[in-house]
Length: 621
Image (cartoon, rainbow, N blue to C red; front, side):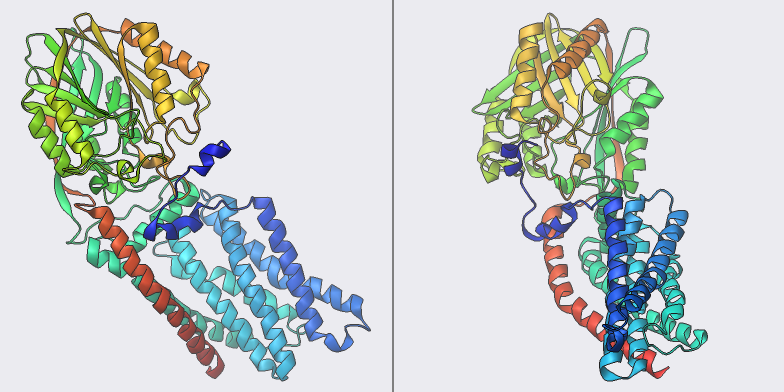
């Protein structure tokens, strides 16, 4: 990213700014390992020096050697064995993340080892040293409990797998107890004390989960802990291993419509498919419906061997799926839509309309009583359209076509635009009024026998793709209405840099003499804690001669593929579909504010109280 572009990269605001910690990248595996080894040796040497302070100067070499031994045996060995054990259990998890998780435990445990020796040395009460070490070791359990649940997806076995490092720590600490001047108790007694302390921290972990889970579950009807888990898994792996089932009774449920348009050549073979589920593809990564465009396209191409364009309807993030597990319903709707599509009767004539007012532009492709209307303000910001605004637009379009299918081109965004333009288009807003006037100005550009040609290619096989473009194909459709041709170029991305779009549209007009428009699916797969809505196509994947060549090949192949077509349409309703619902984003932000406020006050108190309770139990047993 160029410096000027990086400075314009917009971060999350308000309650969502609390996720900024997850935008950071972890150091490399080698760096983490070196830090862990050096830290362990330092802790060992410092602890040994404190324990042997009376002979430190007279026998420096012996103290240093003892310290290195403590660092290796008491810290590095259990640390390494823990990593090996978890990697063996979860081979799909990158070593770096297991190493990082174990290192956090190591850092905490090292402090308690050093603290225990200091307290025992200062007070002369060696038993206090045992208490502090066991307390610190027990506390590590809570960390691994969360790691097992969130990072490693050990939903049921987390209580057991979390015992690995605390147990190994104790077993390998016993051989160096004498060096640290800590009395050696029988192993059974030490384990009993440790596990009773661990039980307290298990209770603490569940109390913390309650504070994370309860507000979202009560307000929105799905698990806040599951959402948090998905976010962390997406940050670390770009995939959510755990897919929560939104089964709470108050989880918002709707009947969501889908439109499927099927183009067939004279032989009856499917040439191309337009699929428009009334969903928003967010909120980010693989969470919710973010990756649906790629998954649906992959499924459809595999089944029907035809270019499939997953379109972005006129919806806002209120229509995000609550869970990626809802994908099965959308896939089924696509399959049913193709199978049950009914041929449209429009006397083989199709029409192309265009209208505009100020920055708003609307195009309408009309097939008899059905039509596809595209909304764009490019090169000005073209953002989501709120559901109530879309209802108004649909009513206005019905003056031209009985059954309009509305598409948001989602093809221009830049962060220097006024804040209102970067939000979804609200009813009675200036932008909404401009669109209404653009609809009113619709006039026919061409009418004629419909021909259609399609082409798709994986951009990654042709150009150097950046993080602003998601997996999937670049899909091209060329439709002709008599002599007039219209080219639709779809990228699986979340919006487009205006300069990128302008360059491509101008190139199509100059070289091929046809109307062309660039569309994005608005997939939030390309978004994360680090990559916000600013991560638009053209920010990293630059307009280039290679991209031009890829597009040229696609257009020329689509034109060559053109033939007279029949069109079938089907409308399928997905019943009881779980989405965020009206004002879903605002509800989530409000709930997050509430959750964070409670957690900031309650969680520290719970942890402090838990430490005192665990210390008392370890002491009296």
